[in-house]
Length: 251
Image 1: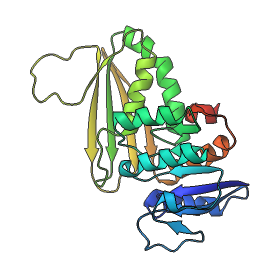
Image 2 (image 1 turned 30 degrees about the vertical axis):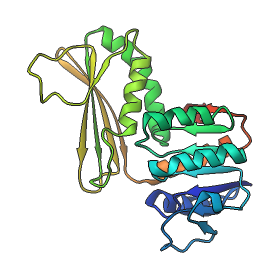
Image 3 (image 1 turned 135 degrees about the vertical axis):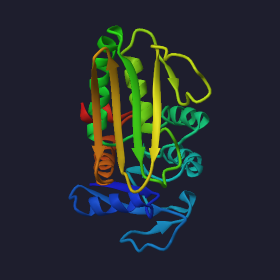
């Protein structure tokens, strides 16, 4: 049985994962961490990770960047692996994740969806061929109006996957409003749409002469991210220190 601490348990994703794990036979949530105490859970909830005295095999973090540093310190000290799903992290926090992974197993992914991680693999294969053929690359992402960071961590991860498939890295461009020049080829443009209750749409566009090739992914429910996080937690349990990602989970 994999024992999980749900960090950010009373948020939308925390509650989604709580419901998913209730249907599992080989994993259970033994404790939750959240400053909000308005939700009733079947497990004890602590407002601070430092106060948690429940033994666990792994932590799933779907909280906020302001909470990340304290969690990483706790996991490193207690030697408890962590599935890090929080987006909008600073460069310093990303460096801290890498540092923490030298002491305990850390799985970091901008998107826990199995489909997105398969898409990253496909983009690595397609990017070199299409870029060499002169195709321009654009990424359009759409999310709900409450999402704070832009572009999404997933969009950036897709851009990184493309760059891994290229012999020469392309520049990321997030705003073209202040320039008036033809589009350079060696750039990846990012566009962010925010509105309504869109769970997560990502389109990677390869625009060439007389044709356009588009790789698309649509998330219709937050459950796809929760399912991936649960699979990642099972995978990470008992792993040696190191930095893992969803590609390790899907093989």
